[in-house]
Length: 359
Image 1 (cartoon, one colour):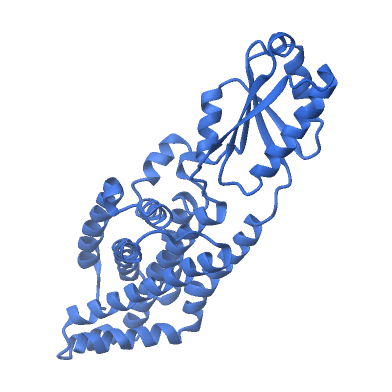
Image 2 (image 1 turned 90 degrees about the vertical axis):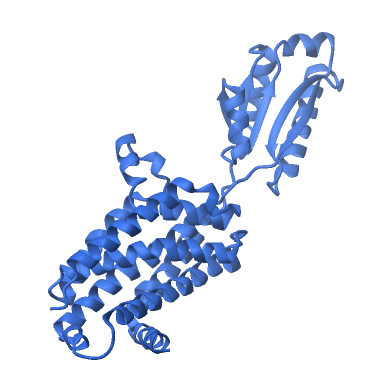
């Protein structure tokens, strides 16, 4: 019962700290809004990759004519399989395949079949298909007096496309939780030490273990509230599909946040003042934020740096939360990431107990 009262008291103190609430809640929400508005900027260009197996006069004329159509951007490709995979991954919306012997087929055995591979989830795919078919009708008229010598064969592909804001949202949620936990615990412990509160606790019947467990529980509850607010905002305002199990998302948040809280206790142990704790906390948080996949995939980093980043605590948590939230995956789909977080929990717990000082 005492633990419950202490936890509620810590929650009240956290909520009353308006500056802390701004950085833990308002600032991440503001980031979601800003990036969401950027991500919603419309792209009016229609990108069409073309694989030309014909390389004859008809294919050259067709590509040249397509390139002159307003809002069409033509990209000549050589590897059809890679281009098809890009359509399946959502990195490419349209792929037009021109078969070998196009000119001969048009002349002797029409119609020549042109394959259009497209993203079947795109709301404008139907419009683009009709547009290309009308374009081919005009080419047919120009080539052979209205005889259908070119025909389009659309192939819809169901993609698992993830929008930029959907990719970003779990990362921002985890980043906000990490920053609040590391800096919040560090500055709180430094403040308690400055005011001799920790020393006075040792002179009371209150068990030190109960005091620290209440602190941890309060921050874990706040982490769940943070995640709910940020992910909920993305789902309601930007239609980000939160398809994962909510209890599983909460479990991953708690597991990862234990690491950040331990880091906060370690930073607080080496901080002689609140200002020092804030500075050291940012020194821990900012490098993790920049290189752990919050704003971009770690795969875009140099290979050596990528290998290091994947073993830091933030990257596996972001990957797991992203997979559980957006793809409805389970913890069993992330054995390496969970193992890394478990090692970090064990190591940071031992270090925090070893270095923490009451005076």
